[in-house]
Structures are given as structure tokens and as C-alpha cells.
Image (cartoon, rainbow, N blue to C red; front, side, top):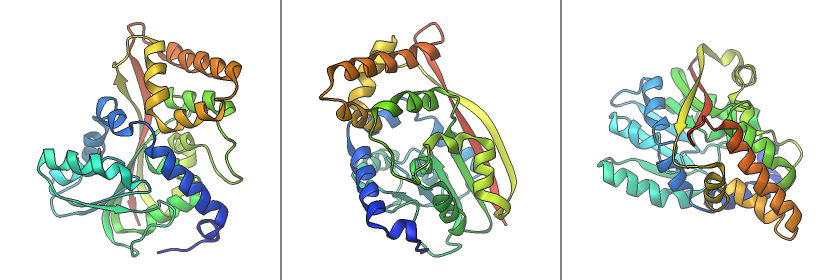
Length: 277
């Protein structure tokens, strides 16, 4: 395991503790199941995961990639900073009739030896680690030469990128050195993170259609009690009725901007695949 001054600081440990708490708030398992379930199988297909391969799913959450990878016959480790999410993940795996390992782990300090896996994946997960270069270094480190990386990340210009920009003035300020998660959805940024340690890099922008809400207000009502980062933003302004009302209006405004006219939205993401050299 790589040790760095970033992951060794008291401030960073406190930040990771806050992240773990944040993702345990609300009901992220419902978000993963109701809204973005199709992304997991898409990433497994893009990665070309085959029976017997050793696969690490980083920031695995409830297993929306890890479980389909196990269904493809891979030997899978689902790693996440918030092991509370594993309860729903294990239930998901049991329903699908597959077994995999669920292990607590920090994307910026993965507890695995170099070259341990044939494939590493992350679906809107690793992007939320605050120090992008550190987590990219760990991602590459644990994959053997010739192995593969496959990532799905929300884009800065898409719905989720717009939502995070909108929530930023209401959320607690990030600590020095933390980078915006949707940058992982920027082609140039993620290519620079991986550098010349990978080859055969392919990126495409795709969308997932979200039709669970009939109106921007319905989306806001769901998101403010279900999604950890949004809950944190509301808690940060809870003592200020004006700012709370403004946040209400701004979140509904994001949904309105992206409404296709029928209450549905297309959430854009960047799909990246690469081979470790």
C-alpha cells in the first residue's frame, strides 16, 4: 500500500470521516437502484470483464458494478470508504446469487499490493475522492501491466455537474487541495491524471435517462432527503430560512434546466477505458 503525506494528515483523516458519514446519510442504495442501476452492467461490458478475472471495484457503494462483474464470472472485491453501504450490497448480491468480497478501503490509500488485479472499475465513485492525482495513482498501481481500467464519471457540463456547481455556495467549504468531483468527467483532466501509465485510452460521453420524477419539485423533494451531499448542504444552511429557500429554488431550477419536457432528464457521464502499461 502506498503511503503519502496527504493521507497521513489529521486533516485528511477528518475529511475522510466526514465523507464516510455523508455517504451514509439518506438512502443512497435507493439512488443506485432506482436511478442509475443500468450503469453497472454498462461498465462491466465496456471493461470486457471475463470469467476468472480479478476485479476491484473502487468506491463500490452498493455494488452496482461489483455484482454484475461477479455475474460475469469474475473474482470481485468491492471496496468502499463507507462500509454501511455493504448491507444493501450484500442483499443485492444474494438476490443475484453471487458471492464477492466486501472490504472497507480508501480510494486514496488502497489496501492492496501492486499489480493485484486484472481490472479496476469505478462507477461515479472514485470521482468523489478529494485528491484526484492520489486516487488515480492508486487506481493504476493496483492493476497489473496489461490489465484494464474502466470508469464512469459525471461530466462537469451534465446534470450532476450542474447540480454540484449549484449546491457549492450552500455547502461547507472544501478543505485546501480538494478538487471538484465532476472534473473526473472531463476528458483532458482524467487523461492527465492517468498519464503515460496507460495506453489505448478511449472516452465517450453517454447519458442515462432518469424518469422517476414528474416535476423539478418532485426531484428536489426526493434529492434533499436521499442524497448525502445534498443533505449536507441543507444541514449547512438549516439555521437560515432565506438560504434554505434559495437552495430549494436553485435545486428545482437545475432539474428544470435539464427537463426534456416530459419530466425526464438525461444525465451525462464520461465512460473511459484504458490498458495499464
